[in-house]
Image (tube, rainbow, N blue to C red):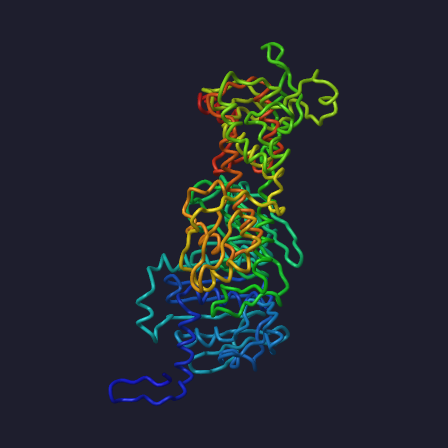
Length: 627
C-alpha cells in the first residue's frame, strides 16, 4: 500500500523536506566517524592530493578534519558542493557506467552536513586566496590556506542523539577510522597519509613503492611471508601479494581486495581467493592477501551500494577464474628453492662418514617398478580407468613385505647410474635447497643438512603432495574425462527448488563428468540415478544439492576441478609412503629432490606443513652457544 493506515487516521502522501531527505541519506552513508573519514579521503584522492592528513578528537565523534593538497574547489562552486547530488565527477549515464573516480554519487557532503557542524575551506589552483564556507549558516568568507581543501566535521550526530547512542568507545571508533585510512594507504602508495588523534600522531605512511607501503602498513612479516602475484587473463589483470599458507590467521582481517583502486568486499573475489588455498590451508585458517584487480570500468558496476564497498561484475565467472588462477600460480612454486644463500661453506663430501655423495635427477613415478604406492602415477599414466581398479591392491602390496629398494620405491640416480643419469639435470651438492639426507627419525621424519642448518621433513606429508600433484597432472584435471559412476538401484529423490531444477537441466553434461546423473522426477522433484563410485555409500540427495548449489554460483569447470581434486587427494593420502617405513639414504635424497621441484610441496593435501628449517643460529640458541 502507498499510504500508511493507523486506525481511522490516514496520512497523506507528500514530498519530504530536504533536511529530512538528507538525514535519511546520511543513515545510508554515515554509519560512524569512520564513514566520514572514508568519504572525505575519497574526495581528497579524487582531487589529486599527494598528502592527506586526518585529525580526530574523541575517536572522530567530536572532530573529523581531513586536509589535502589537491586541486581545491573554486569559490563559486563551494555552496553547490553541499547540495544533494552535486558532483564534478560524472555528467551523463555514460559516465556512470564507466566510473573511474572514488566518489561519484554527489551526496556525501550534504549527508554529513545534515548530521554535524561542518565547514569547508578550500583554495583552487591559481586562486588568490582561500574561502571558508559554513555549512549551517551558508556564510562564505576569505581565509588563509595553501592550495587544497580542508573539511571539518564537528559533533557528529549532534542533531540525532539516538544515532549517537549506537557509537562505541572512543578507542573503538578510532580503530575504525585508522582502518578506513589504512585501506586507502594500501592502494595509493604514491600518496602520503598521516593520522592525528588528540594532538598526537598515531599513524604515518610516507609515499613509497607498493612493496614498501605493504610492509609499512601490514608489517615486514607480511612481505616476508607472502609471494608476488602478477597474472593477466583476457581483459583482467591481478597484481599484489598472497600470503603463504604458514602466514594464515584465525580471522579474515588481513584480506584486502581492490577493484580499479577501490577497496571492496565482494563474494566473488573472496571465494576465488579462498578456493586457491583449498588444498594448502589446514582446517579453518584464513589466508592473508592484498590483491589489486584492474578491469575495464565498463565491465563492473560500482553503483550498487551507498557506501560503494560492493560491486557487481558483468561476468563474475570470468573474474572468479582469473583471481583463482592468479593466486594458485603464485603459490605453486615450492619455497625450498627460495631459501637465501648462507655464508656457510658448501657441504663437504661425506667420505669421512661413509655417506655417499648423491647426484640425482627428479623422481620419476612413471618408471615401471611393480604396483607399489610410489607407482600410482604410472598406473594413472597407463589408463585413468585402470587406475580406479588398482590403487587398493597397490596400497596393500606396498604395506606388505620388506621395504622396497630405491629402484622400486623412488627413482634415485647416483653418479654411476648410466646414461640416463648423466643426461639428467642435477645441482651441485651444496646448492640443494633441502640439502642431503642424514637419517630417518622414528620412521616418520627425515633429517637433512643444508647450508642454513637442519631440515626436518614429514615424509608421509611430503610424499602425499608429490603423488597428488603427479596424479592431477597425469589425469589431466578438467580435461573432460568423466569420473567413474555407479547407478543407484533405487533413485534418491528430493524436493528441489526451481533454480536447482534449472541448474540440473542446464548442467547435465557437467554433472555426468562428475559421475552424477540427476534428472527431473516431477515438476518439483529431482531424482539422483547415479553417483561417483567412490561416494556410493554417502547421502546421494545431499551430495546432489551441494553440487547443484556450487554449479549455480560458480563456473562449471571450477566445480569439476574441485570434485576431482578431492578424489585424487584421498587416493594420494592412501598412496603415500606410510610412517614406520624404513627408507634408505638414496630414497630420502630422491624424496628431497622431488620436493624441490613439485608445485605446492610445502604443504600436504590437508594443509599441514611438509618441512621445517632450523637454522644454525636457532640451534646455537638452544644450546646457549655464544652467550
